[in-house]
Length: 410
Image (cartoon, rainbow, N blue to C red):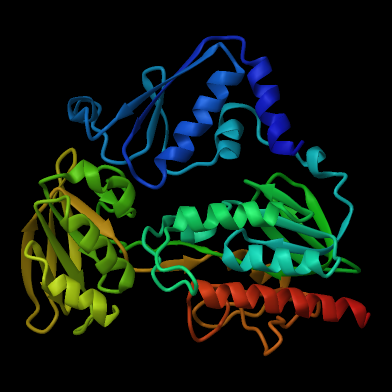
């Protein structure tokens, strides 16, 4: 049984007081994970009850609680959590976090992979097939791909969705002898006699080689009221929160692929969508631009800079500036979806001596090796020229083969 399984059963056995959880959900990609997690807890422990409220059908309850982001979970009358979370993360929030002692007997890995997205899983599968003792450390298993609804360029598959793809990848990875450690955050890496990876809980994992397959976090626009009204009209996930803005005017910041994909998705739900792009021309694929041009309730504003979010208790509008004339204009709206890319989760590598470029991407050579021997990197936040799921899967395999080649030559 995995550590996670033990933690769930121990929490269920120890929860002696009655605990009532209410999950406000809809048919988005995040909600099933939350719903299934609390259903499992309720089955394991009769002191726990779980009520599911479908937000789209019960708009009155959503409005009464002022909910503008789903899934949102209430413990009794108080908000417990909002947004995507795995069962491991929920158990840790309910009970005590996993302590360092729980990871003390891991021994030395041949290769330790940090990151649970396509690159990390590909590396884990290839490394295990080479006969290497392999560990995979992931704060969020599945990576950024799980926030992608439509994937139409995966060779061999006409159409799939992010959660479905990564569920299949996880099942495939688990069919190999990979030690998967979920919901644990790496905070440091250092090359000594062995490579040592320090976790947020104080644990230290050791390996002969390491593969960095890191993701990122949504980039903020850094204007007044953005942080204050996060989940109160300012959101970063159109698939999660879009249904809460049915028949409302909303805006999407960003004219890249993720921005236009979000806008097209929201146009089918909301009253009107306005896309604001900072550059004079859109950066998105032509096929998305053509779809957007044919969408009657979607307007695209180019060469504009967002200036200020207006609000009362919730978002009420947005001021922006036309960059060519410096004229300030206003939009009345009730929701703002920020889709301007991601910030690499690489800052913690600097103390370990890992070389980064000006975009905070990990610099690698043709063999996917970093400037520190035995430490490799794959995926989104290397200095690779192109960023695609299929490329990341290939780079994960390259990393694993590189690690194997490094080990046999030591």
